[in-house]
Amino acid sequence: MAKLYFQYSTMNAGKSTLLLQASHNYGERGMQSYLITAKLDNRAGDARIGSRIGIGERADTFEAGEDLFAKIKARLDAAPCACVFIDEAQFLEPEQVWQLARAVDDLGVPIMCYGLRVDFQGKLFPGSAELLALADEMREVRTICHCGKKATMVVRQDDSGNVLTAGDQVQIGGNETYVSLCRRHWREAVGDTPADR
Image (cartoon, rainbow, N blue to C red):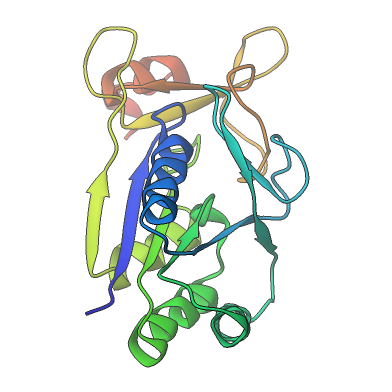
């Protein structure tokens, strides 16, 4: 039975690596997968999913307002597909997550989404919030803070390494922009004290 999966974490946990490995496993068994990533994140190149460890694959893209049910149905109509993989799932719109759920239910294809849970201000991304509500199965991909504890938060830094506490929710960047921290060190970094809350 097909399911909607959500694997989430902070930055630098290896989500894209896991996605690419899972897709590779399908290919080794003679099954095709369908890779999709956010069009606005082209750090690995246009229409490409890339990992920080140097592996990558070409992918289709999604953008705001696009009907993902129709996109997936068209792909399934064109050729067999054993699984759909979506990278940067935090950028999905809530309605697009519903479209993915409908594709799982009505088209019978498993869909595995990989993305961030929260932004640099500790707020859920809309796509991630909807995935947390609708996914059949969820898994946290873990990474660690500099103190060795599990990192659950991320800070955004400017070019000088100063922590930013305001700005747009979406700003594409990697290690030069974002640092994953445990909640305690995130609170210290953003200046959150008990009196602030």
